[in-house]
Image 1 (cartoon, one colour):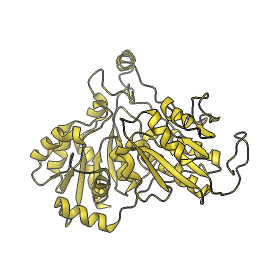
Image 2 (cartoon, rainbow, N blue to C red):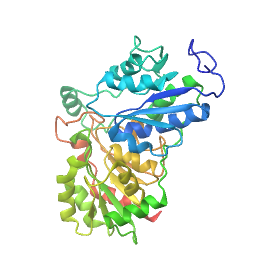
Image 3 (cartoon, rainbow, N blue to C red):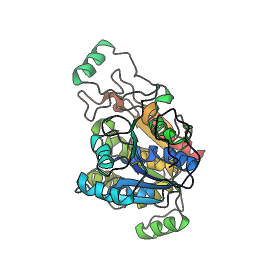
Image 4 (cartoon, rainbow, N blue to C red):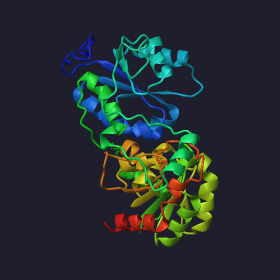
Length: 368
């Protein structure tokens, strides 16, 4: 066994043939942000067998990913006992648990994996990793706090944070236990030319001119969503063919936008996760809220325009922290970022972001 057993101060041994389970995260954006850590883990242990345990809905994200040897899928209907039996059969030497949740640690504990590394849950882990000194908790403001800030500091713009607090660093911190570098790199997903050809044929997308993507949804909640009427105004104003994105829950909104932009192609609810990645990769620019497809688009190389209202680009922005390829537009409000799903007042942070500024940012990207 070449994985350090004793303390976090142990010097990890060189590459070996260990079997390592990585318990993946459950949200698309977080999964993309974890990719640099897994690439660093692969660098540190090039001969190890690395398996990723992930929910079925995210499995296609890891198709042919160079850091992963095996993808173990589970569904929401499977309990801890069923999942732990799958893991026990794998005879893993160590488990790297990315989510800070009881269930994630309990699965590996139930499976009898001898080394279990993660944040929190000390009774279920053999090695609890302390948070980085630069780690910043995303404090959710209460409705009362939001109203107090708006009333007391009407001229205040918003809070900002150092880029060293970006969520991407949290996953890099965990893999350092195995001797991996904590130096960040951009999340990257490769799309094969034949995937693009198959997508264009299946959905009848014309790629003869520049394409602009519109992603008006945000699964986390309405506080992160730039108003739909402004997405429509952008689509009607720019002289570009638009692709409209969204999951099954975004179909009504996407249908509304598509009806107002006759030349658009509505893909909401029609693509698999892999097809979504391909579709995002052919966009010359994407206007999107802060949501999973934002991270996915950045990973396939698409440049973004993102209105940020209730969340922080310093903590969860796309790509490498501070990536200059993208245009991240900050809404102004004394209560922002509040990190809430629902706005308790009037959505003033996202509503402060004007259509003209967004259109200007899109045109800058298209002309670059």
